[in-house]
Length: 224
Image 1: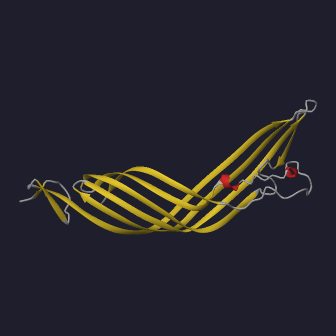
Image 2: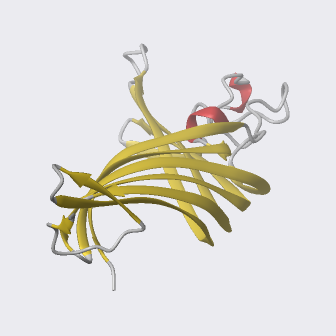
Image 3: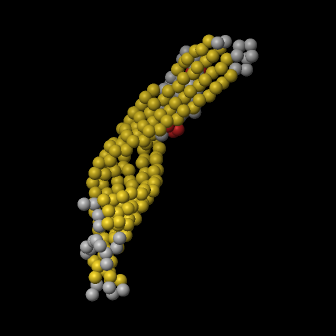
């Protein structure tokens, strides 16, 4: 007769090994539902120092441009989790999708510090961040965020196992700082700006991008 050689687990089906030991095995499929919050915050800073070629009136200019973005997601999460187990080993495959609102926020700022004969002046605006595009902007967008993953587990006891796995997530329609830069610059707007000469360039128009996240995880799962 088969007898269980394992100190835990009562499974729906068993496979006899060598006619004397039973190795518990089985499969199950679960559905999940929950809430997901995600936050992605990035910033890009550009610093320059310029010096005039006029030696009679030496001057230096320190220019700073900053572009910052924040994406904040709130939504519902739906998923499927398939698990197979044999003896102490388990294999878990998961697929999830989160749907909800993503609030994209962009902050653009600039500053120029001029030094001439020991006198220092500070003006708003740098080179790529000028009065024409500086400010804070926000926009909401409905998005879907898919995720896939796989975990291999090993039971240390009947209700405790260690896990090693991989997961990948794709976040579309987000704002990233580098995409918000407009390289079209009207030099008349460089500080100190001239009065109403030429087009208002650079301009701001929120541009969408995407974000891939991949990772390896190591964990401990305890069930009771």
